[in-house]
Image (cartoon, rainbow, N blue to C red):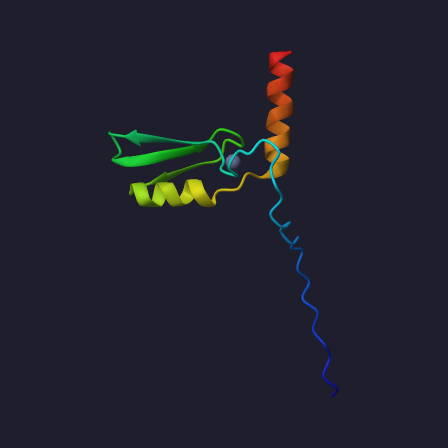
Length: 87
Ligand SMILES: [Zn+2]
């Protein structure tokens, strides 16, 4: 039986190389961190795509905020909805 070449059916889009940002702002996402005293944990919420998470340690919260990437479709959808509300 001849060896067949396996082609991975991945749907991964390569990340674009670092592009200079015209505004000069860092590529961080606006993530708010709140301390929930009742549950003894941090609540993180992305202000752009509304994704949220809970973390027990501030280091983890920082890590989440740093590694979080908005779902572009969701962010675009929310931006559209917010614009409609504002209009
Ligand atoms: Zn987000």
